[in-house]
Image 1 (cartoon, rainbow, N blue to C red):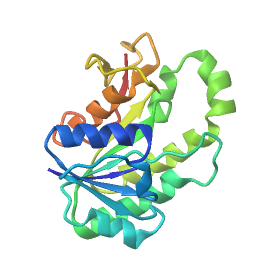
Image 2 (tube, one colour):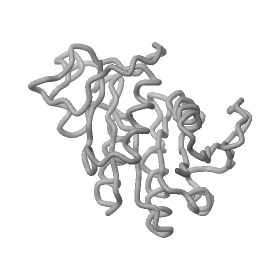
Image 3 (spheres, rainbow, N blue to C red):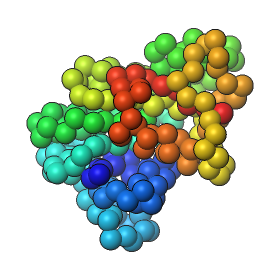
Length: 209
């Protein structure tokens, strides 16, 4: 498949690129600074642009089969890059006719908030993740109203641990995992699976060990 990745220079974006190429996909990495990707492959194309520029976003989406979105910002940033950038991505997909979107969000948005430990509800989310949570909440709302074929992956704390291929996904409060951690390569693997798997179509599965 032909895939375009937004947020390609981030930690998850890096794994999305490498795993996509390993699986034989043709990858377009949308980046503000191409120098941040030190990878050369015959099936990798770097497109320089700003996710806040609708025309540049639309150009990157043209000719693609699916879109992977892993936009990120510093923890206390209030610029709403995920919300604004995702709007441009959705607009571009709708105009061109690309239907499949897999987007990275965070465990704690929407109905997943109820599954958080008490310490997260009282301390971590209000004090540390307030702006991140608000940005992802707005991002998810846009996606859910887009009319596209979307899957939103809600990630817990992702780590530098190696790939395992063994993790929980789509869990509920009744069967939630013991930890709130997931490795970056495992998270990327799960997101990539969603480009062709309809199990979680129009759903928001969380993923953790």
